[in-house]
Structures are given as structure tokens and as C-alpha cells.
Length: 270
Image (tube, rainbow, N blue to C red; front, side, top):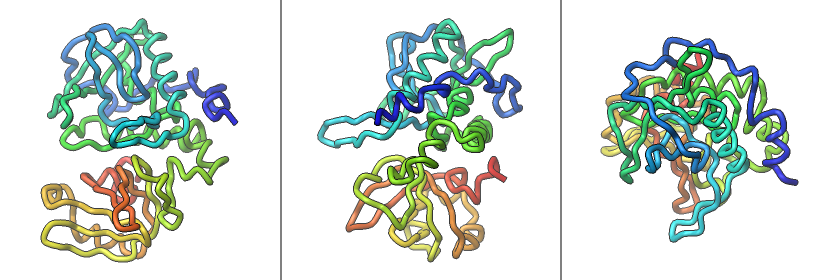
């Protein structure tokens, strides 16, 4: 079955995506308007002949056969097509708003991006997340508009569109939600890992939250963002934690950088 074709129908462009912006969706300080060329993926575009990463968005990844091989994730092409359509429908003109960090660890520029529609300035990230073809992602220290992005994702999830329809109809794919009890090597990469927190403890370097086969790790440099008592209160609860999973010694590990990445600590999901 061609998953991309199946889910593109009626989902690529949602005529009903809301134009009413919550305060957190409005731009704080747009640094300038320019022309975009095209989308490289569901979370990267070309602006002024350079790649630009959309802050706060994680799209399904296409397969990459490199030294560090990346497994293909469902609907990667559909996500890229949705982003291209959003750009094309707004004359490829985008407003760029930088956050505290202007480039990621690999040197790729990153920003919040805006589009104009009927005299309004709208968040491109929000529009994409409302299609259900991308996930919200917390990227410290760039935390502006986080509430907007998670609420946009929640809207898509409640309407069961895009990846959320996939999760309902094809749970065997374990994407975007990967149950901790069913982890396989295919679940490396960015997912929402779901399971009961069996134990919370602290080492000299990490806050440690363990599910049955998935270990969440909060490094010491990120402790300032967390209340350890609230983390301890998660023991015995089922949580959804999002991040890049990597296998080590037959267990999955996920680094958590901010409370937004854990659903029960995320103020946008209350």
C-alpha cells in the first residue's frame, strides 16, 4: 500500500486550518521577509539559496543511506509535499524570525517562519502541524512559540489526520507513537515513546526516568528546566516522551531537554 498516496487525499491542504492565531502563534519580531525556493523535507526549506530548519517541528524522515543510516519513516514525502504546497499557496514569500540560537549544532540556520494570508501574518509551523504531517519538537534554547506548536499538533491529533490517522489505522508501524513494550531496532530516530515510568532516580550526571525498555535521560546541563519533585511524581504513570531514540545494550535511550517533551509536564497540553 502506498501510504503517502493514501494519506495525501484530503490532508495535504486543509482548507479549514484556522487563521485565528493564539497569542503565542503571533510573531514577536520578524527579522525580514524574503522568498523561499522549495522544501527540502517536511521541516527544512531553501531560503536565499541556503537551507533553513523550521524551529519546533520534526517531520518524518526519508531514508538516508550514509555512514549513519537513517531509516525511512512513514509519510515523509507527504510531509514535504504539504510544506511545498503551503509555500506555493502563499507566493513563496516568508517572514523569518530568529530565536536565541540562529543555527543548530551542524551550522544549519533555524528560525520561526511566517506567511501572509488575507492581510494576516500566520505561522508556517502552525499551518504544517495542523495538517498532522509533522510533530512538535522542543529545541532548547529556542522556546518561543512552543505552546502554539504543541496546541497545533494537538488539534491535528484530535481530528485524527495525517500521522495521527496512521497511528490509529496502522499501529503495527509504531510511528509516530512507539510503545516502550514493543521497541525494535526500527524505532531509532525521533518518536513519541509511550510507557509507564517504573523508576525515577538521580545520578551525578543525569535525572533517570525508566520505562520497561526505554530510559529517559535528562543531562545535568538541562536540570535548570525541571522540578525534580515533579519528575518523581511521574513514577507509576503512563507518559508520552518525545525525542531521538537510540539503542544501546538492547535498551532504547532518549535524551530529554525540556518539560515540553513529556506530555504530563507540557503546559500546552493541560
